Image (tube, rainbow, N blue to C red; front, side, top):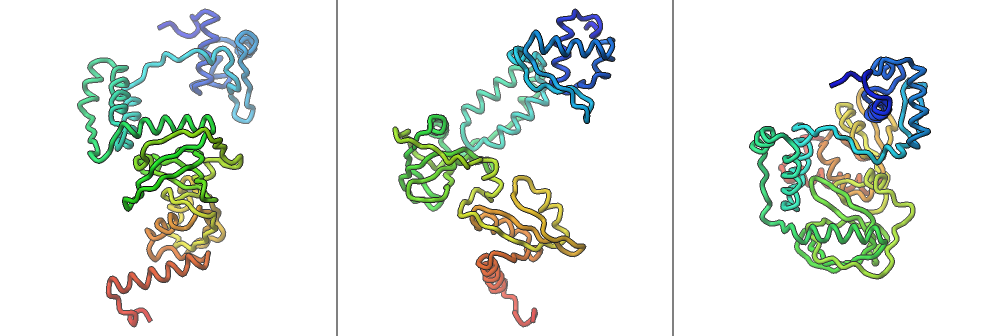
Amino acid sequence: MLPYSEYSKSRKLLEMFRLIKSGEAASQEELSNIFEVSTKTIGNYKRELEREWDAEITYNKSESRYMIEREGTLGLLKSTQTITADDVNLILATLVESQNFMETKMNIIKNGLLGLLPEEESKKLSKMLHTEKNDKCNDQPIVFNLNKIRRAITNERKIEFTYRSAVGNHKTHKIVPYSFACEFGKYYIIGKPEDKEKLVHFRLDRIGKVDILEESGVKSDEFNVYNYLKRTWYMYGGEETTVKVKFSQEFYNVVTEKNMIEGSLLEHNEDYFVYEFVANGTLGIKLWLLGFGAGAEVLEPKELREEFKNISKDMMKLYKIDKAVHE
């Protein structure tokens, strides 16, 4: 392979764009050293990329690096970078996590990814993989429903479907579909039923035949799935509620470093800290807080605090703990 300095000017321009975009080399000095030209020439290359290829490249002074703001015509070009066995394994690991459904589709993707590797590497990696199908799951309806619901969201139409609850009850629902979400390898549809004011979550593998209706199904302009999920615990919904909890100091990192939560630290000392959460309903966050045992004390709301008091009393009865011992 020729060194960068031996490339033609057009090839240098393309390589410079690729290096900046990938982050491999983005400062004037790095690019100057790679192409063995002056920083002034690098500046000329940058202007030519913008003029001839309709790209927009800015220079971030604080980070001393170029940044691609708009790819322009070069955005149509695809990288020919070879996918590696590690890349394939990472993607397949993600697929395996969701292997409870769509097994046929998963195998098509798996075989396609393995086909991108050299034959010997493909054989070795395929021998390392083993997936197991959940016999209770039926792929075909889920695939059809997933595609239908996506089209309904895109076209802003209501949908109607039968739904089997966790206890086995069947009911027909008509909703405005808002968005998809995933929790512990299960897909959910977030939507607003006609007979409710709050959003409800439906597990995709419990949904029966889906019909796209002609009725308009426009979601609220205020809805943002990212912000919504930050207030959703274990995919349980409900009215937006502020929950204030006092934690033992040992759980500080566990709580404050948790991804996708909406809340704030109110108080902190060497023994404990107080954290305030915003949650859609209290059932999901209640299940999470129970995992901390005596290391989490619910302060607010009052109703949730009373629930935890009753749970504690029931636990004492269950384990036959003599109340007098603690008095």
